[in-house]
Image 1 (cartoon, rainbow, N blue to C red):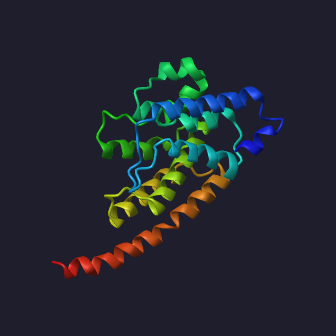
Image 2: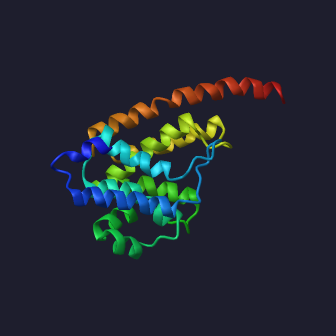
Image 3: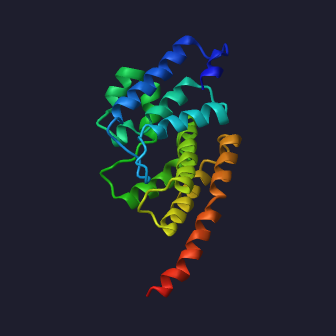
Length: 203
Protein backbone atom coordinates (compact mmCIF):
# COMPACT_ATOMS: atom_id res chain seq x y z
CA UNK A 1 0.00 0.00 0.00
CA UNK A 2 2.85 2.37 0.72
CA UNK A 3 3.50 3.55 -2.81
CA UNK A 4 -0.04 4.88 -3.25
CA UNK A 5 -0.15 6.90 -0.06
CA UNK A 6 1.75 9.75 -1.70
CA UNK A 7 -1.29 10.81 -3.70
CA UNK A 8 -2.61 14.26 -2.67
CA UNK A 9 -6.04 12.99 -1.62
CA UNK A 10 -4.50 10.89 1.13
CA UNK A 11 -3.15 13.28 3.75
CA UNK A 12 -0.40 12.66 6.25
CA UNK A 13 -2.93 12.53 9.07
CA UNK A 14 -4.84 9.82 7.16
CA UNK A 15 -1.66 7.80 6.79
CA UNK A 16 -1.05 8.16 10.50
CA UNK A 17 -4.60 7.03 11.25
CA UNK A 18 -4.20 3.88 9.17
CA UNK A 19 -0.84 3.07 10.78
CA UNK A 20 -2.35 3.54 14.23
CA UNK A 21 -5.24 1.24 13.33
CA UNK A 22 -2.84 -1.41 12.04
CA UNK A 23 -0.75 -1.20 15.22
CA UNK A 24 -3.88 -1.35 17.39
CA UNK A 25 -5.17 -4.42 15.53
CA UNK A 26 -1.76 -6.11 15.72
CA UNK A 27 -1.68 -5.60 19.48
CA UNK A 28 -5.25 -6.74 20.08
CA UNK A 29 -4.89 -9.87 17.93
CA UNK A 30 -1.31 -10.61 19.02
CA UNK A 31 -2.12 -13.95 20.66
CA UNK A 32 -4.68 -15.11 18.11
CA UNK A 33 -4.20 -17.43 15.15
CA UNK A 34 -6.23 -18.32 12.10
CA UNK A 35 -7.60 -21.87 11.90
CA UNK A 36 -5.54 -22.96 8.89
CA UNK A 37 -2.95 -25.75 9.11
CA UNK A 38 -0.11 -23.22 9.48
CA UNK A 39 -1.95 -21.39 12.30
CA UNK A 40 -1.24 -18.07 10.57
CA UNK A 41 -1.19 -14.91 12.70
CA UNK A 42 -4.75 -13.59 12.94
CA UNK A 43 -3.70 -10.05 12.08
CA UNK A 44 -2.91 -11.21 8.54
CA UNK A 45 -6.66 -11.25 7.95
CA UNK A 46 -7.52 -7.58 8.68
CA UNK A 47 -4.37 -6.52 6.83
CA UNK A 48 -5.59 -8.51 3.82
CA UNK A 49 -8.91 -6.63 3.95
CA UNK A 50 -7.18 -3.26 4.00
CA UNK A 51 -4.89 -4.25 1.15
CA UNK A 52 -7.80 -5.53 -0.93
CA UNK A 53 -9.78 -2.34 -0.43
CA UNK A 54 -6.82 -0.07 -1.19
CA UNK A 55 -4.95 -1.87 -3.97
CA UNK A 56 -7.60 -3.92 -5.72
CA UNK A 57 -10.80 -1.91 -5.21
CA UNK A 58 -9.16 1.55 -5.04
CA UNK A 59 -11.12 2.51 -1.94
CA UNK A 60 -9.08 5.30 -0.40
CA UNK A 61 -11.40 6.45 2.37
CA UNK A 62 -9.25 6.36 5.54
CA UNK A 63 -12.31 5.61 7.68
CA UNK A 64 -13.02 2.49 5.63
CA UNK A 65 -9.39 1.34 5.61
CA UNK A 66 -9.04 1.86 9.37
CA UNK A 67 -12.37 0.12 10.04
CA UNK A 68 -11.24 -2.83 7.92
CA UNK A 69 -8.11 -3.16 10.03
CA UNK A 70 -10.18 -2.98 13.21
CA UNK A 71 -13.24 -4.90 12.05
CA UNK A 72 -12.76 -7.93 14.33
CA UNK A 73 -11.47 -6.16 17.42
CA UNK A 74 -14.83 -5.81 19.20
CA UNK A 75 -16.06 -9.26 18.16
CA UNK A 76 -12.90 -11.24 18.87
CA UNK A 77 -10.95 -9.29 21.50
CA UNK A 78 -11.76 -7.38 24.68
CA UNK A 79 -12.05 -4.10 22.77
CA UNK A 80 -15.19 -2.06 23.37
CA UNK A 81 -17.00 0.48 21.24
CA UNK A 82 -16.09 3.15 23.77
CA UNK A 83 -12.44 2.18 23.53
CA UNK A 84 -12.50 2.42 19.73
CA UNK A 85 -14.26 5.76 19.85
CA UNK A 86 -11.65 7.12 22.25
CA UNK A 87 -8.81 5.90 20.05
CA UNK A 88 -10.19 6.47 16.55
CA UNK A 89 -13.38 8.51 16.73
CA UNK A 90 -17.09 7.78 16.43
CA UNK A 91 -17.16 7.29 12.65
CA UNK A 92 -14.69 4.40 12.62
CA UNK A 93 -16.16 2.82 15.74
CA UNK A 94 -19.64 2.94 14.19
CA UNK A 95 -18.50 1.03 11.10
CA UNK A 96 -16.81 -1.62 13.23
CA UNK A 97 -19.96 -2.03 15.34
CA UNK A 98 -22.05 -2.49 12.18
CA UNK A 99 -19.96 -5.44 11.04
CA UNK A 100 -19.66 -7.02 14.50
CA UNK A 101 -21.66 -10.15 15.32
CA UNK A 102 -23.33 -10.57 18.70
CA UNK A 103 -21.40 -13.47 20.19
CA UNK A 104 -24.12 -14.06 22.79
CA UNK A 105 -26.28 -15.52 20.01
CA UNK A 106 -25.98 -19.00 18.56
CA UNK A 107 -23.78 -19.27 15.47
CA UNK A 108 -26.67 -20.17 13.17
CA UNK A 109 -28.59 -17.11 14.34
CA UNK A 110 -25.56 -14.85 13.83
CA UNK A 111 -25.21 -16.12 10.28
CA UNK A 112 -28.90 -15.59 9.59
CA UNK A 113 -28.73 -12.04 10.90
CA UNK A 114 -25.74 -11.23 8.70
CA UNK A 115 -27.89 -12.04 5.68
CA UNK A 116 -30.92 -10.20 7.04
CA UNK A 117 -29.04 -7.02 8.01
CA UNK A 118 -26.63 -6.77 5.07
CA UNK A 119 -28.85 -4.55 2.94
CA UNK A 120 -29.37 -2.02 5.74
CA UNK A 121 -25.67 -1.45 6.48
CA UNK A 122 -24.10 1.94 5.81
CA UNK A 123 -22.08 2.27 2.60
CA UNK A 124 -18.80 2.15 4.50
CA UNK A 125 -19.84 -0.95 6.42
CA UNK A 126 -20.90 -2.63 3.17
CA UNK A 127 -17.43 -2.05 1.74
CA UNK A 128 -15.82 -3.66 4.78
CA UNK A 129 -18.31 -6.53 4.70
CA UNK A 130 -17.61 -7.17 1.01
CA UNK A 131 -13.87 -7.17 1.60
CA UNK A 132 -14.28 -9.54 4.55
CA UNK A 133 -16.28 -12.04 2.53
CA UNK A 134 -13.80 -11.91 -0.39
CA UNK A 135 -10.83 -12.50 1.87
CA UNK A 136 -12.63 -15.27 3.72
CA UNK A 137 -13.50 -17.10 0.49
CA UNK A 138 -9.92 -16.80 -0.71
CA UNK A 139 -8.75 -18.29 2.57
CA UNK A 140 -11.35 -21.06 2.53
CA UNK A 141 -10.21 -21.97 -0.99
CA UNK A 142 -6.45 -21.78 -0.37
CA UNK A 143 -5.82 -22.21 3.35
CA UNK A 144 -9.02 -23.54 4.92
CA UNK A 145 -9.43 -24.35 8.59
CA UNK A 146 -7.66 -27.63 9.23
CA UNK A 147 -10.80 -29.44 10.37
CA UNK A 148 -13.17 -28.23 7.63
CA UNK A 149 -14.42 -30.86 5.21
CA UNK A 150 -15.04 -29.97 1.53
CA UNK A 151 -18.76 -29.98 2.31
CA UNK A 152 -18.40 -27.44 5.08
CA UNK A 153 -16.25 -25.27 2.85
CA UNK A 154 -18.93 -25.36 0.14
CA UNK A 155 -21.56 -24.42 2.71
CA UNK A 156 -19.45 -21.41 3.70
CA UNK A 157 -19.17 -20.31 0.07
CA UNK A 158 -22.95 -20.47 -0.30
CA UNK A 159 -23.63 -18.57 2.93
CA UNK A 160 -21.14 -15.84 1.98
CA UNK A 161 -22.88 -15.47 -1.38
CA UNK A 162 -26.25 -15.11 0.37
CA UNK A 163 -24.78 -12.20 2.38
CA UNK A 164 -23.12 -10.55 -0.61
CA UNK A 165 -26.25 -10.86 -2.77
CA UNK A 166 -27.83 -8.41 -0.30
CA UNK A 167 -24.90 -6.02 -0.88
CA UNK A 168 -25.13 -5.88 -4.67
CA UNK A 169 -24.89 -2.39 -6.12
CA UNK A 170 -22.40 -1.21 -3.49
CA UNK A 171 -19.11 -1.40 -5.40
CA UNK A 172 -18.76 -3.00 -8.83
CA UNK A 173 -15.10 -3.96 -8.51
CA UNK A 174 -15.49 -5.54 -5.10
CA UNK A 175 -18.49 -7.48 -6.34
CA UNK A 176 -16.48 -8.67 -9.35
CA UNK A 177 -13.69 -9.78 -7.03
CA UNK A 178 -16.21 -11.63 -4.89
CA UNK A 179 -17.64 -13.43 -7.91
CA UNK A 180 -14.10 -14.46 -8.90
CA UNK A 181 -13.53 -15.84 -5.42
CA UNK A 182 -16.90 -17.59 -5.37
CA UNK A 183 -16.14 -19.29 -8.70
CA UNK A 184 -13.52 -21.32 -6.83
CA UNK A 185 -16.34 -23.15 -5.08
CA UNK A 186 -16.25 -25.51 -8.05
CA UNK A 187 -12.71 -26.55 -7.11
CA UNK A 188 -13.80 -27.29 -3.56
CA UNK A 189 -16.89 -29.14 -4.75
CA UNK A 190 -14.70 -31.29 -7.00
CA UNK A 191 -12.65 -32.41 -4.02
CA UNK A 192 -15.93 -33.35 -2.33
CA UNK A 193 -16.98 -35.43 -5.34
CA UNK A 194 -13.58 -37.14 -5.42
CA UNK A 195 -13.65 -37.83 -1.70
CA UNK A 196 -17.21 -39.17 -1.63
CA UNK A 197 -16.62 -42.44 -3.53
CA UNK A 198 -13.54 -43.14 -1.40
CA UNK A 199 -15.58 -42.51 1.74
CA UNK A 200 -18.27 -44.87 0.53
CA UNK A 201 -15.72 -47.62 -0.15
CA UNK A 202 -14.52 -47.34 3.46
CA UNK A 203 -17.95 -48.04 4.90
